[in-house]
Length: 254
Image (cartoon, rainbow, N blue to C red; front, side):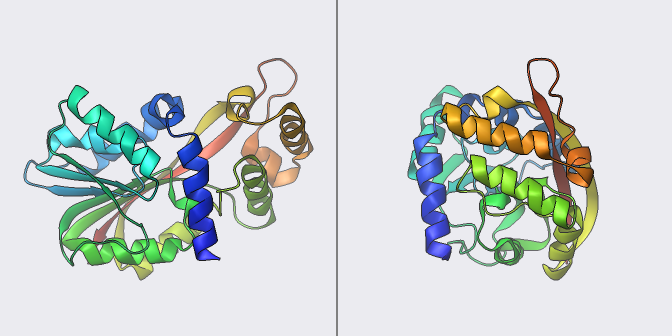
């Protein structure tokens, strides 16, 4: 099952790799700059960016630290990162394939581990947190940004909505679940916040056929109760939009 999930991630992201270079959510989302502000990177730091995608987080941190390792399990995504290294003059960015749940690095290697808008694709996010703790130096930071859902049935609905659109989607966690995972890490949570982003439905669903887009729109229209409050769809006037939430957590390794 785990291998099937990873293969689905590689297929989905491999097929759409170039789109993530210019994706507004990934390249310019508010959470990107928040990561930098909340972690206060230092010039001598070694930073590991897990599930780097098109490398937006890695390139953000590169001017502020000694070295950044930009890692992912999808070769096509890493190729997009490699192409950007010379044009961004980011010679301190090392691009390598690595599995978030089985990192190929020694204990206590990094000062900071980052992971942004990716853990909802992980088969075992608890394993990712444990691996991050292992490769961090004592006192090092883990900074995670990911889409979150409300607790309970409403969260199940939002996850089903996301998975219909993206087969590589596994499960978004709630903030309560993330904080519990950090506590088992072991990490002391130094900062936790949520922020929302309004998403234009036509752009979000553009990779799909007209029929699939109608299915997705029907799910958005039929959201009720806490799920509707969470998504807050605006359906009356074009463009149709809805709301997604991101959680930001920064934890210090004990």
